[in-house]
Length: 388
Length: 130
Image 1 (cartoon, rainbow over the protein chains, first blue to last red):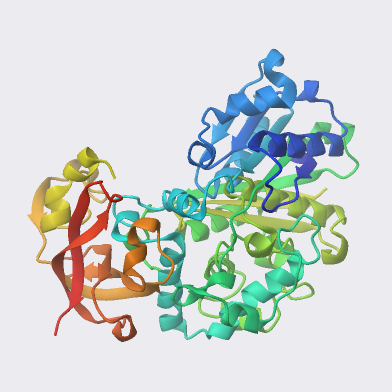
Image 2: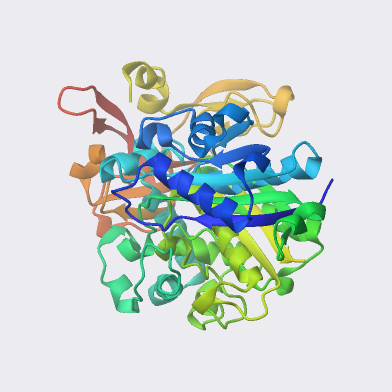
């Protein structure tokens, strides 16, 4: 297997993009990534596109071909493949691109992610997202996505006695970071009060515990490490790519508040890279809800089970803390265009490793991690990236 | 949910008919036709669940999907059935009184309506055991 490097990144601004179409946003992200790698489109050998549900959000399937077409590659007939794993679609698209290059099958590959969510009303988007869980035996019984994560939160708080304020601190911290990220959907800081007084969605989760509905696209370009310097002075090496699955329904899990797929993917990634938690300078985790960040940092091993609430409240996951978590603002503040999120996480870590993350820069960042979850933990992708 | 898709699972939704692996004795609800432990050595047969269990975790839904919005606030829970499997279900009760560990039993209830002229879906919910 060959070593693989990220040589270019591009990401649209995240938000409610009423003026832009699905096609507009992925073309924008792809062009930014090509420009970043100082590469022309003719050099691209293949594309992988993470997208959860263009079929429901805009009534369009066959996204692989559509994107290759509008990216101006129809006449070159390059292979273009859509990858779907609900909210982990982007992470899996990145992994497929890495595998394609590592195997020697392809040289220069784009991994993109895109979701246009605001062209349907909120009832329709809520229902579409429920398809990431078990439609027949969770959704039909009246479960919503916030409802499922709320049951994780209730189980967690019952077992470990985390306070409501500690949980809210996740959102406060991520909004602080989002306010320092020019592409973030939400650019303002919030207080504990903002979270604790927001509308109740599913007890104990309130509106400000939840990631928003977002339009956005992101793209990264990967190449063999040995060729990376043809395109960039700062190649970022992919040190590990890991993926794991688990039961589709939350109720079938061994432990409701542990994502075993996160544990498995995390352990595989650390083993592959010959690294441990203390080597990681910052991590982008999948905080679709505040409780998801709490579970993630424990299940990845950054703190002990049951201690993430205190760890967060003590500032250890903030910029300047022991392990900065979600410097981009996370899904909570940067926004969560489901298929694009996994790619955006890679873009953020690459910026940190290049030292170009501006006001949210982690000093001396050398190694970073991404953690992307599909559904309530039925699919997890973990990547470790490092400076060369 | 379309008529055929719903009708196909009437015994499961109305009467909690699940399955059981005779090789290892593990019960499945929702039903599975393949035992993850015994794999091809498993022998799957139908099993009607008693319909009693314990609340493992819960939430009170305040913002629901469209079909369920007339029910809010309602209790959604994961219940561990006495035979072993865990399911997601609604518990018909005062939301202020729900607790982890409480005993519940199954009841036949209306679940949702497909708009004003669509089919009415019935199924199983739970109530607290007095």
